[in-house]
Image (tube, rainbow, N blue to C red; front, side, top):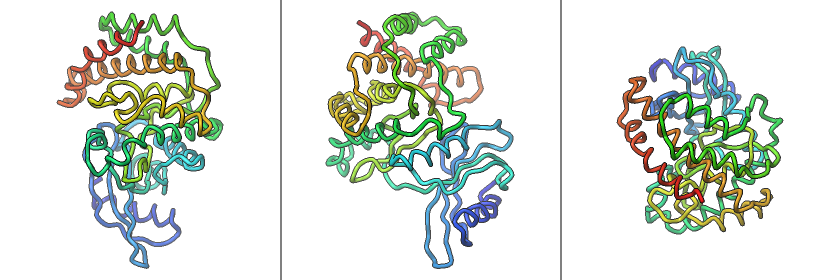
Length: 321
């Protein structure tokens, strides 16, 4: 479906969700997204009020995805006071868009990490971001898992080991990391909703700070420290020396997290989860490279990510005692 084909179904869906007739304007395909389409558009109501919205849509014929689950997560997150875009509607191909979809509000702000870390107009808010991340994560971890039926869990070490074995490539640094993780595993805590990809790059930032947390497609049930450790992975510092997203300190993050009701953070356990996150990113880099080299998706971006495997191996070795 092109922009013209989408306008009619979008008008019907949004009108039904808002309870009033609307006109659709400016339907535009946004770049990026190999597995899902993203479109921006505006709705105009009878009072001439214009609202910007975003459509995320599976490609026609794609297998059933987690978009409906992601919509449920965003709605539960909003109830828990996590800053997220408001979900306007979600559904499947029967709604007329020929695919599973989610429509949500457009949130203005910056998402590109290097701009968040360097642009002058964000200089005043950068020192506040680590604490805001801590409060947002505490809110995420308050979401009752029972509100999200179908949210999966599992042992992250065994999941990474299984994936690395299936890739069939020798990476001694990753094998060493997996052995250390298995031997030093911290005590299990109560399972919570885990965002799964909470980091610089998946946040919309404005002059006052974090406006929205994006990309919930990797959410699952697990240990809440997984999210904190992932945020501290070196890859998400983008050249900065500050360990939390490139914009703050671990002390700022933990203090705000605990102060907002998050579980007490053991520093050794946080280091373990940062190490696991680093290894996980290295394996993701291998997968991205293979996606390109096997011809599944020809992409310079995927190839460039694949070249970073050796960097991550070094980062991992520096984390191991």
